[in-house]
Image 1: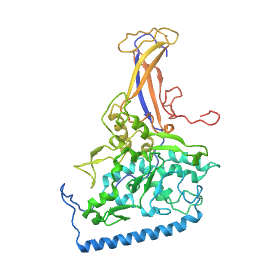
Image 2 (image 1 turned 180 degrees about the vertical axis):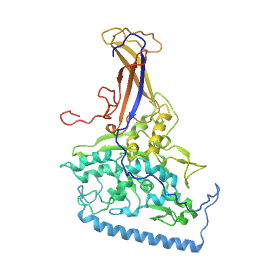
Image 3 (image 1 turned 45 degrees about the horizontal axis):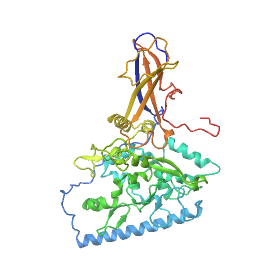
Image 4 (image 1 turned 45 degrees about the vertical axis):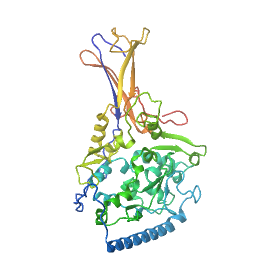
Length: 469
């Protein structure tokens, strides 16, 4: 950069930009139907569960028997429809490969077995409202994702069977329901638009490994268990849940939901040999990066120390509720927005509240440190560093090189995480003279919304076989 006579003002900041796309008209609404939830008064802590009468036990047993029979019959009929035309590319014993997701029981799990998000939202309006704008509920339908997965589907050497690798996390209801096959017989409209629903996460019964690609087992969805702890499938009357909230909790909550290993099931990925016809290749590793960070307290080699924090501790912070929420404790509820660094999705769909919450989250902590560390004349001369403690003066028309150190201070994984080509993170570097006129700038958006080509970007740039962008 060239300096004119006078005083220089240098400003360096960090930018995390979203694609400048016009909001979509008619985007899916995030509004919650303000139907009052059924009346419920939480019992005082330590109060023992309500005792059922013999008649109530008998009624529950009959309900359970009918529900189990109905789900089994529906599943058998559904499998008889889906199986004959399904592409078992990796053999009949591996219907969901190259994803790692598995379903409890035999065969495909019909999408109708999952209680809807609207059903859960009756009593959990805060959770539903947050989820509706979050990335999880838009996991499949966003054009950013579908553009990528369609490349795989349209590849003449691959096809839709290979997309089970991606959709095991982005659309597990579709994968487990046998929808990802040529000439599918499945109506995908509802679960494609809902992505990961409440009962997607809360129906997981076990974790397989930390290999990622949905390394988990999905149980037949249930929102309550009987007095013996046995799951009762499907939707049940709300009074059954409100009479025994402890049984509802036992059906939908597991200790592993609070662990980083649960997040690792999908926030870690690989390209297995069945997908690439080569060998196992590790892809993104948010979980491994967390393990190696100071926040896991599992790595003795970290230079800095910090209190333990899981994925949920950062991305599911507890906050006061604004809507009726029977899962709240003392007026607060863990966030189901899963705030992180993605501003593109809420901007694209016009989810203003989610967008602002994301911006507030990114500004809430000292996550990144940007240090203008040194200056050096490009035509020779000593490196002047560190700035702030070493005096420096520049001559008119002198061209200097600035060294900037960017440090991740409070992030438990790499920066940028996961699929790095989907983010636009960059440094914004501005030089002004004494009058405030900008004489040099790097890291800005062009009029067409694209990042200037000279910016220092932390984004991966996919290239083709010739090396072209």
